[in-house]
Amino acid sequence: MQTHFQKGLRSAFTLIETLVVVSIIVLILTLTAPSLFSTMKSTKLSSAGDSVLGYLSEAQQMAVTNNIPIEVRFFKYSTPLSPTPAFRSLQMFKIRTGNEVGGTFVEGQSSGGGAFQEKEEAVGQLLKVPEGIIIVHDSTDLTPIFGANDFPDQKTGGGSYSGQQNATYNALRFFPDSSCRVLTATADAGLVLTYPALPQSCLTLAADNGQQITVDNLPKNFYTIQVDPYTGKLRTYRPGQY
Image (cartoon, rainbow, N blue to C red; front, side):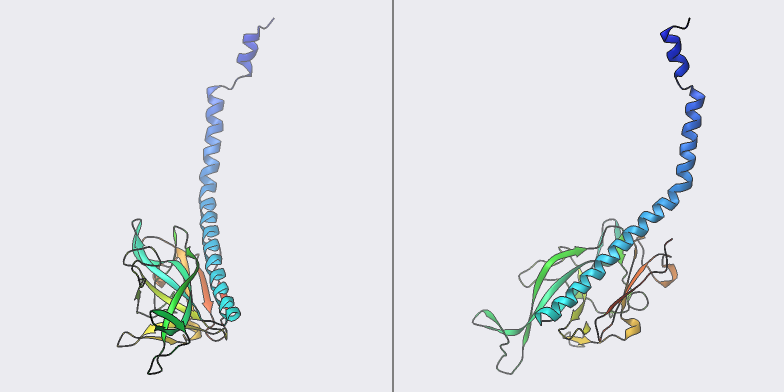
């Protein structure tokens, strides 16, 4: 007759059986991990691109609904983990036109010479691109919608809108007629607005590899947004999931 102790010994796993099971699990993880990590990165990139797309769409709708220009500033800076400057956050602004009268800004009020001043008012929350994803800073190929000029991110009373020291920005401005223009700079540092050519009116999001991303080293998976400068219509392009 078997004792209770003997029955317990016979129902337990042996060391060899345990090692075989662990080896199978390790093999499965080894085979599936690259695909899993790639899927996670692709999902993160898609989520970031959709957030930026939605943010731009909201700015355009706000300009039309409120009958006031809405500017979206793209803030560029580096981080301790990624020393290469790139666009990492966005903020919407209402642009009001007027002049200071007795220390108070009066909208629609011109100066004696008929000139106007612009005053920005931040709207909503700062949108931060998720860690590990950037809006590529490349004025010629991947994000040609912005020119070569950067503007300092400085509040009138001090500090910055992005919360980052030495940050700069480029900006798109949506108008009530649904059009969109880009801020550029003249020789005397004055701001002007221009319509970008449609083939160049796009910006690209990609995984941050810690280096300057160009066409030559662009990851296979990226997210491009095109902004029609005349209608404000937004389109996206994805090469596929890798």
